[in-house]
Amino acid sequence: MISIQNQTVLITGASSGIGEACARVFAQAGAKLILVARRQERLEELAKELGNSSYPLVLDVRSRTSVESALSNLPEPVSAIDILINNAGLSRGLNKLQDGDFQDWEEMIDTNIKGLLYLTRSVVPGMISRGRGHVVFLGSTAGHQTYPNGNVYCATKAAVRVISEGLKQDLLGTPVRVSSVDPGLVETEFSQVRFRGDSDRAKTVYQGLTPLTPMDVAEVILFCATRPLHVNISEVLLMPNDQAGSMLFNRQT
Ligand code: NDP
Ligand code: 8X3
Image (tube, rainbow, N blue to C red):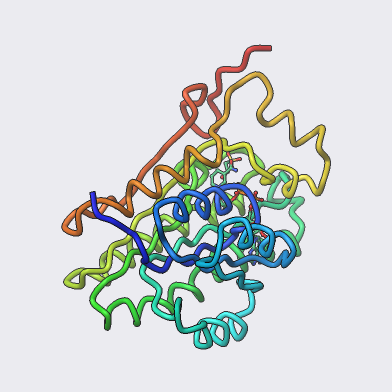
């Protein structure tokens, strides 16, 4: 196990769910954090709670110019990113493709694919020149197995898997590591966002089973980041014990 004490970790989507849990786990391990999301108040509260080594950065990852500008103007103590956790992402709706909503598609594609490409493109050259770095992507079981009505969300997560694989190939011969961590059901705000605040519908996603917690996923990400430097964990597929695939659940009704 290697230490990540004082390493700089940029986490996108740190205002909620898996990203927030990553912030807690990496802060506990002694890292300096850049916490990225759109909801300023939440980021500021979290940064305050985690202490002096956490920097809130309000940023919409869909805006390429904002990403480029923010990353080239990072405060000195965190200007050299060692670990990039590409976690920000969302789903919108659950519709047959032939009934799909163009705006929902664009929001998912712009956030889940283009956003993480902008971050990765901005950060990786510095990692190569410093001779150290690790890029972690949040994929999903949805990127391995499509489920009915999941079409475009599943496509974005399949893209994340392919981008992670491609980046690893393109970085071969450098010390920079690449991991994709691909969870099944994790109880976060994910389903609230998917169903636009319909809490009753969101709850049914996790009904009768024990889902993963955001902390379960964050601990796996920390595990990937703390392996010895010659070890690259390329892909982790993790599910609740009550899940065996994108559509296969053990629910107690
Ligand atoms: P949450 O909704 O709890 O968190 C999503 C985070 O992404 C929030 O912090 C949100 O912050 C941020 N975000 C969304 N859009 C943007 C944007 N345009 N710019 C910056 N930040 C943004 O969901 P999860 O924690 O569950 O999701 C995290 C990742 O995990 C996603 O990529 C998701 O696809 C993936 N995942 C989730 C699973 C689950 O079952 N929950 C399973 C498998 C993968 P804000 O709104 O403040 O900008
Ligand atoms: C999130 C998991 O199954 O709700 O990626 O799509 S699922």
